Image 1 (cartoon, rainbow, N blue to C red):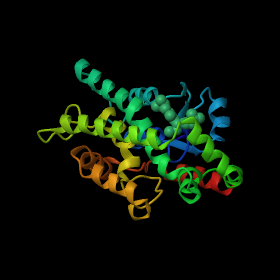
Image 2 (image 1 turned 60 degrees about the vertical axis):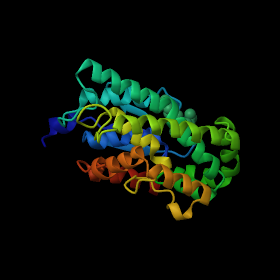
Image 3 (image 1 turned 90 degrees about the vertical axis):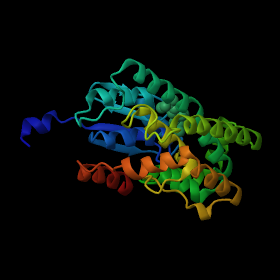
Length: 276
Ligand SMILES: N[C@@H](CCC(=O)N[C@@H](CS)C(=O)NCC(=O)O)C(=O)O
């Protein structure tokens, strides 16, 4: 690599909360398309300082030379345009592309909210679990903030997302409905939701379903199924055995490569925040 190449190499920054499944959707896409990036992890609510400096509020935020992107779907569309890996997430065929976009929108709007709310109902009050979910490789001051303010942060999360027994039951109902839609689409032994290759619809489903499937390849590991409340573990086992669950776990096993093109750069970034 000569100096002009180095000067022209763009380092994309991805601002995340480690466990956020919308962040995992983007992280997976970056890894799959082999696009180099640095992930900057934050503990909620301290992420707001990083996201607001870059024009956003929630995570993920992607910071690039071409501008900042503050929604996971906008980010995937942008990444598709800069992919040089020969792999693309949106088909060129107009009808297939529309199908992918409609499924992605459905999963973003319903599945993502439901899996998060259902998971938080059981786990958001558990300090050890939430430390693993929110604090992994984040700046030390934010981790100290977590230890001091955990009861407040946890209560705020339950308030913001309206986490109650009733809302958790209704979220579980919503999750099952989306799984049934995916089951039906996969009928006849289809490998992917649309066409013959992995698309944004597949990645979005698998990443947003991860909190209720616990794929072992997920880069942020929070709990083993044996450590979960019995009621929660039973639902996860049931969902893992559906056609949609089997398919998402297969996608994780076969397609969730962790990016290796710039391991040193990525590692040094995470080490830097961990050592701050
Ligand atoms: N539609 C957004 C949803 C992102 C989202 O809901 N992010 C959550 C984490 S899973 C978040 O940042 N919550 C904290 C906040 O809004 O400040 C996307 O697809 O990017």
